[in-house]
Length: 387
Ligand SMILES: *Cc1c(COP(=O)(O)O)cnc(C)c1O
Image (cartoon, rainbow, N blue to C red; front, top):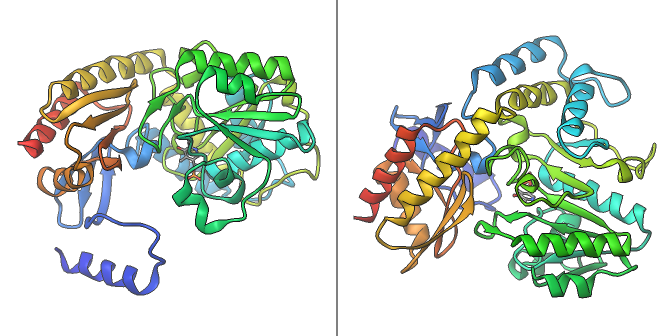
């Protein structure tokens, strides 16, 4: 361990709340799919900051946009107009649901905005969510995240959430005139990359239509090109009434968004919601540059091809019982567990950055600009770790 890393560990121990279990690496630089630590060692990044660096580390176009905007105007407040925010809102709605945008600084805040919108759309209405969901750590988002270990220490939570199995029958039974919204991740990310079956999403759509409830997709992890289309919903043929975005949207800067279709575009009115930093010009300029890179049919087709290449390679590895996911949002199920140890050894011995979502599941989400050679390199490093 470098003296510098030892010092950082000491600072963390003394001054940082211990909410994270960090790996013993101090990254100082990134470019594309490559990271460097404080001693100049090179790493291959197949986590992308948990699907944040979809354009890769320090994409030149994103860096240039940030530099330029930071030198012009960094913040002015939502009491005024700035061009990056208005252009980004236009770009997002025209390329997705056709309604309007509320900007936020994070994923959880985008979920909070969605919950407020849903409750205003149907006063006092219930929010239906499914087992295995993850929607964030703030109170509303946590109340929509039915995981005992995450919720229990923080009770009482926000009332009015209904949790059902991610199955067509269960959703049909749960949705009624009392329902404000059904909130779903088309592909559940944090709990191990579980794509919800198309029948489940269709049943949710039909039940919401019949009951006048809003269908909201949380695309914070599966959106922004991650699955090989700009939005995950494009591949399942079910269009939501609203969706939440964050993670990959800012190319590394913190920004989120709630995007609606036309029906919900006017629900939130002056005074209903707000955020000091949200929609700031630097983050929005970054997001516009990110969309220039990702909203490209050739790149998205590459994501689907490389996803198949990676999945095929993973299936051939010893210890791998199954592979799940879509595009470059993949996970493997290990036959004998040991995922946390595998991830640690891959990092320290093979300099491959991965993440375990649980004791048997390893997640793969490289930058979308990854090359064939880098996919093969990751597979070789993983094979070496397993050997
Ligand atoms: C990461 C994530 C969130 C929370 O986003 P934060 O920016 O960490 O608040 C919400 N929903 C999904 C699907 C996520 O993957």
